[in-house]
Amino acid sequence: MSQYWTDIVNKLDPYIPGEQPQDQQYVKLNTNENPYPPSAKAIQAIDSYKKDKLKLYPDPESTLLREALAFRFNLQKENIFVGNGSDEVLAHSFQAFFKQQKNLLFPDLSYSFYPVYCGLYEIESTTIPLNENFTINSADYNIDNGGIIIPNPNAPTSILMPLSDIEKICRESSSVVIIDEAYIDFGGETAIPLTKKYDNLLVIQTFSKSRSMAGLRLGYAVGHAALIDGLNRIKNSFNSYPVDSLAQVAAVASIKDEPYFQQSCQKIIQTRKKATEDLQKLGFTVLPSAANFIFVTHQTRGAQQLYAELKQAGVLVRYFNKPRIDNYLRITIGTDEEMQTLISTLHGLLT
Image (cartoon, rainbow, N blue to C red; front, side):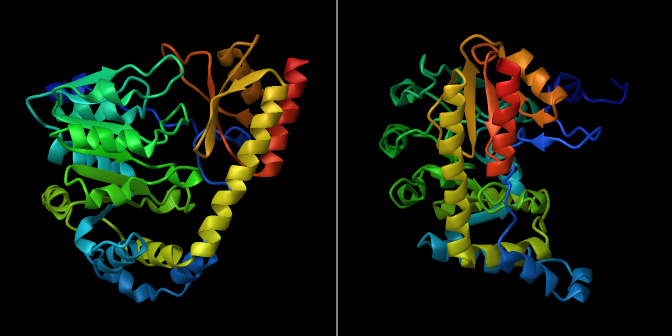
């Protein structure tokens, strides 16, 4: 604490990212990174970029990137907003749409950055409990509110919400509904087509997961032009040059390499299926996942103990010391070899 902090800084409870220990080499299955490299075309675009252009500011409108995304989703570039990772896009969205007199709604078990943004921007919120099986009941959101945000698939539970339920929420809500689709490419159906039908729907995605670009920090929002204009008003009051030139050219190249994108996603889906089966044989219950991670609990061994023992053995997974999920582990899907190391290590710990 510092005497120079403002009152709001004193009250903040900041987000804590997955640990990144440097004391040894780990099999790193705790931060939902993609185990495969970005598209070779994206790497080539960076390598061939004329480096003397780095002395110039990037295109503040990210025009080519927005056009590429608009083409992919059969929309107009006016329906696309881009920023430094989906976290920045989310932050702008909270400022643009959720600072209301009525409370923001989101699941009680969801992305832990949401309450952090509420604290930072002084937004009142109400958490809606998930069902006993960790699914979302869309009817629970049909109450008076100042906005709704839901991750789909949900994090950390990995469970997918049906598109029909999302449409029901959009249809019944008079406020902005944000669907946070960081993991949608690993087995879900995007809500982006619904943005043509509902002007209160904003869908946010990222290049960090399915496109293996977490290090470049790129995210985007898709929605009605009026919502995008609201985001631009926030962005241009904060940082008018948010996305760097190298990130823009790499992202455009990645979007154009659809075969590699699909191949990479399918590899993770297949590995997830095999890992799920192997973990079930070891006595784990694995929630149905549509993400690049799985959420598991063991019949007899506590999650916190298993987390510590795995870390000691050189395998990192994510443990959340929170009500309802303090006996679960979140495990990122790595390569086949990494997942086999996990399974072999667990077999040794459990037998």
